[in-house]
Length: 127
Image 1 (cartoon, helix red, strand yellow):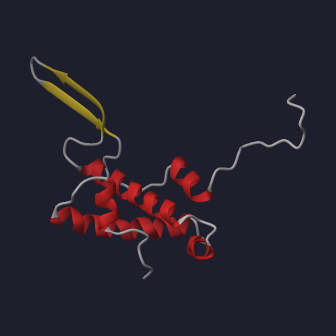
Image 2 (cartoon, rainbow, N blue to C red):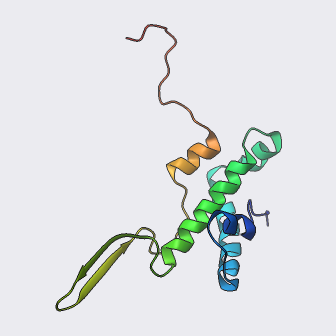
Image 3 (tube, rainbow, N blue to C red):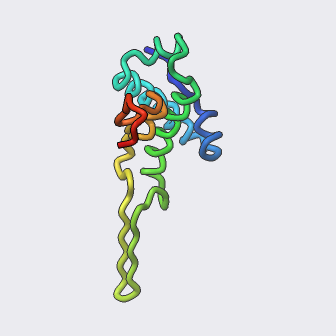
């Protein structure tokens, strides 16, 4: 089993102090997030060793993935839309990540791969 890219203290420093149960969950999710990152970026370990990928970026992405998953399942957190009615009582909420899935965003991918412009030009002519 490969090592996780981040640890519980990294998650806590980027989010908030974790309870004992949350630490257990975060530890498992960090291993899962690291496995997902290795599946998405198969050469990431070699790139970290060679210095072609910033290790701080990989730690940040792993933590962001875990925090998104944990916020998605935490009571009162991760709500993207909420509706309430006073009579006769109604309430609804839409969660950003209701299943607590681990996923990589485009911003995460850019952080790991680095910024690459979508189009380039070889001419100094702006037209």
